[in-house]
Image (cartoon, rainbow, N blue to C red):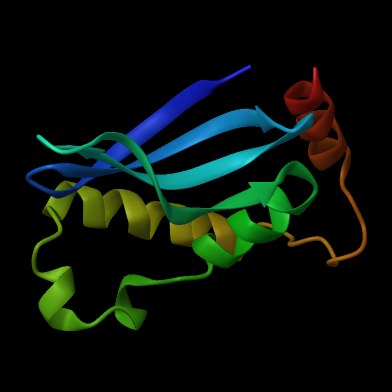
Length: 117
């Protein structure tokens, strides 16, 4: 099963693709560069794969990054609507009780079950 989640334009001929896939019988999240050029079209070796068992930990790491942590010059390119969305999400994360690393919540267990179907 492959499900593309989205893509980010990196350059004129390269996108970063995020997808849920099943590689070697193991489900996970793949974040990989996709090139569309005269010489080659397809995925490159540049990227990473997050096993489903580590997805919650990965998501928590990403959610822990605030716009204040990002260089101001880089943040200038972010649209104001996106900044507001990120700030709202950051507030929700702060308000939420983050489970201990080794304890799974019912929601985490349900997510793993859904992904592994």
